[in-house]
Amino acid sequence: MTDHAQQPVLAAEAEFDDGASSLDGSREQERLDLTHNLWLLTWDNKLCNCPKNVGAKRVLDIGTGTGVWALDYADDHPESSVLGVDLSPIQSGFVPPNCSFEVDDVEKEWLWSEPFDLIFVRNMIASFSDWPGMIAKAYERLEPGGYLELQDNMFPLMCRDDTMTDDFKPYKWTKLVLEAAANMGRPVNVAASFKKMLEDAGFVDVEEKKAIWPYNPWPLDPKLKELGTWAEASAATGIEAASMALFTRVLDWSTEEATVFCAEVRNEHKKIGVHAYYDVYAAWGRKPEKEDEEDAVVPS
Image 1 (cartoon, one colour):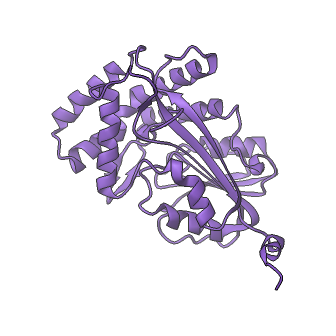
Image 2 (cartoon, helix red, strand yellow):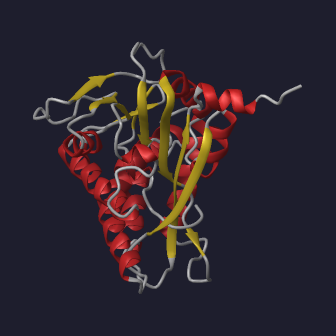
Image 3 (tube, helix red, strand yellow):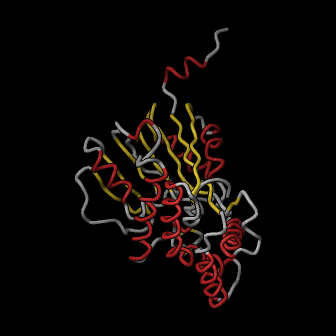
């Protein structure tokens, strides 16, 4: 990791089936809702950073999880039609009339015929083996002028001073998750590349925001301290969920070894004297409109 945040791959309960992750269990659902609040705090209460934070007509939320982002967007924008998709049907049954959910695998063919003008992807590191391919699908399903926004954190844990050593358990945990996910072909260090991926896919007006999540409330700055409080709470329930399958199925650890190590990680997560953090990124871009393409043509 590198700069501000900690939304670890803790974002998924990492029960891997043929390489994909699924979210199950009420505790994990509560944690995902908690992490949603962490993201809102990170971006000053904005659901997204692109111009479609307001005014989108047809919205797709990929990897919607509990559906909390889709529900919030639908509530805030009754004029919008919002669709959330995920591998697991764990969303609320109580939804506004302009919001709906589908169980779908976005790594397979996208069958939606009507284009979207906002596609939103968050907390999906370790979920895709082919990020450029996923971004290309999103590009095809956006109407001209529509936006794709990607948000996620980076691994491993970072530190700008000498307070974090190589044997610090939360740091070792992030390095091991990084190794295991890479072995699966589903990397967790892609967020810093989102901006370039969008540019390479043909998006224009591409922008990036970077923040950090302190791994616990060690900073003196009030906002960073609050971010650290939320990040620590998220990690407390997510460390095992995110890594048990990786450690036992990919790194060939025993269940006992993985359980003991995760407990050690959780205990050391409370050390205020270590100035560790995760880098967090948001990147977004616009699908060109016809006039953009015409302007790009150099007269002969």
